Length: 186
Image (cartoon, rainbow, N blue to C red; front, side, top):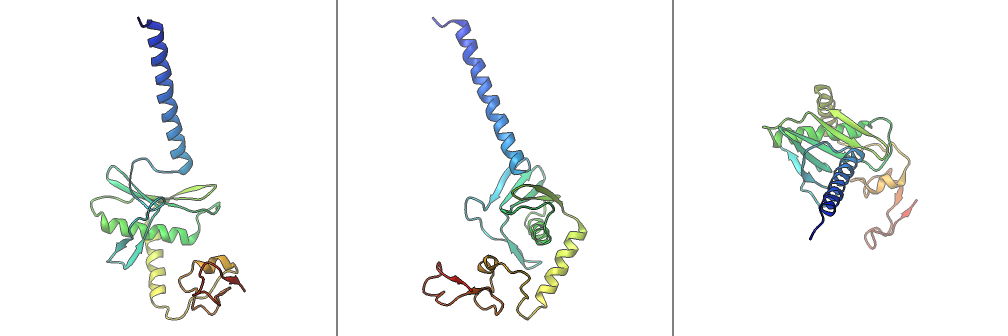
């Protein structure tokens, strides 16, 4: 025969376990700064498809998109540290706003989240940010020359789409075709 106190103890331990899991999951969401809702797109763990705006001729792959009611919220994780959002990251988020608005006209895109190692920022979808992005895109489309390098970090050159043709490259690409994983910094 099962003793009522044993049943009560089992129920109590089960409830403590459930509450612990809920508290843990809420804490994880807070640490990652994920907005509440259901993740409907992800590029962090798997290869997400490229999202496109045909109207603005821009594409991108946010790390995640969360749906919360009648809204979708782009989320971008950065491995660097920042005390304020960086300009290029704000424009990247603005591009995600345009893409998501075009692809989900029935849903709002009120804000996005940029998460750095040590901080997170909620970026509002404003007309000023949209205007800044459209202006930057117009400038880029009218630039026919090679872009000017604005850094002195060879590691940034490795991820640049102009890396093999750039006369300002900080990387010596001698032998690049034979073994692309072994190259020398100049």
